[in-house]
Length: 196
Image 1 (cartoon, rainbow, N blue to C red):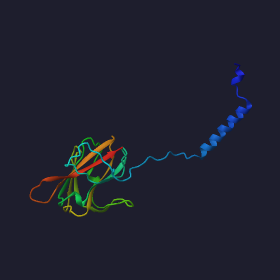
Image 2 (cartoon, one colour):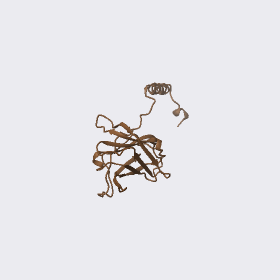
Image 3 (cartoon, helix red, strand yellow):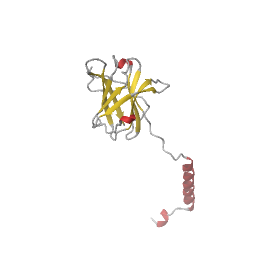
Image 4 (cartoon, helix red, strand yellow):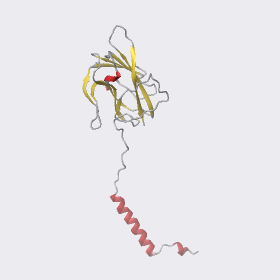
């Protein structure tokens, strides 16, 4: 084989130049931004699987604005009328120890909610006065409303945080203390949130 066999002919060189020019022109017409990643749909999962489906576990409804790691998110931990039988004097929420997001009392609020549906989002109708305490280890949130939370209507603890660094499922448990002589807290249910 001679070296001339590898040398492009004028015809091939012209064709190559036309292809390069055409691809540059086509590239200019294509959008320069990548498609956006899918965001949270502002609703919890429709299907939840648990290895131990015991009768002692009750699933509570929640809304989470973002499921991405380290992204700013708003959580609505809801308590619907069917989730409680008595008024709530004090609400305790246990936070998993491996939920490595900083929870600050100033970023917590108690709201009377309007539940959304297919065409509307759940939203806070009225912010209720309450005192919030978060323990030093960030494993418990104590909510002391100024007046007991009544049995009717949907109420939520709203938490504004940056999502944790690690992916996984996190179970938050709700314990409520009813008004009365004996200060005993009872289990209401759990919110199981997911970080992608």
